[in-house]
Image (cartoon, rainbow, N blue to C red):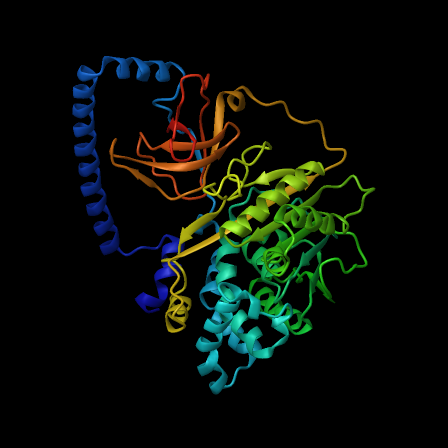
Length: 475
């Protein structure tokens, strides 16, 4: 295996060459020296400032009493940890281009035209949306472009997300029925199969619904090809039931899980009604598929792009689900009003809830594909919410003492430099509102990480960020 071809797979598997390890250790030592030098300079500056301004020192002491300083993180849970994806799935993701070539049977001429078609479709999905038809995947060339490029990137995003969900996030049992709305080429079912090997042995029926029968047929071929490479002798692939139609088209069975990947943002793009109105309608459209009389758990997974408008739509639909007694399981660390509800007329600078990771670990072939289509992608982002409802759940567990003493923070940004104190900070979602977490102890969390820190005793002496209004909390 060539070095450049193995880079992504080796990094994901933790198989590094000694030379790379030594280089990393050398870089880590230099970074540690730099941090210590900065901390020493910061302490000296603080001592000088305290002598000049004794009142400021008194305010700092008050904040310490309320646990706003020296707040050490006790636990970190990653959102996009690559090593949680099974090795057989990593191999499939790395060679997904071959699966597409085998199932699509593209001629040499069609392969040459792919980069141009991918770029044209990219414009239709982003800055030239008015030119995109609602059933654009019915066009064979656009379907090939979508599968060859956009589906591949979406699988990278979704497998990393799904693989890091809690063990019982989907709460699926034997013979359960699932529904994927706007399924296209079955991206969500494929990602679920790749990311959650414990579900492969379950007898599940997946209804996949889309306007394009061609996309559904191509997606089923890809799904079966992926399943064939990962099945054991005693396993069978999930039953796929293709349904041609728009959101709202009825199916014969009642699902336990409904998934929607990159669906409602596309519908909203061509609708002039306000987003809050659309969010309520879309939520009701989803809930009509569930059995109103069942006591079993009902779960919805909504995933959209990480842009401001799509994130705003996700936040509004989250609110609509909560009003229908569905509880957010992820990414929200609470059930209160979303502190990152996006940009509105009253708050044009509002933060929107989205998460991202660096794409340097993506398959080399996919990165080359992006480069050839002049669509270089350094980051992959998304907005999502996972909600669930159970009519007669088991007796709820009482919160432990640790839960009442700790505060959960969901990192929702990359690091922000604070040159005045020579530290980094991160915007976070929490039950006390939007938080600007100052990395006092250099834990360096990643975008999407879930932290558990000591809960402040009071917000009375808290400082607030002038730009965003976020509560400033040291971690």
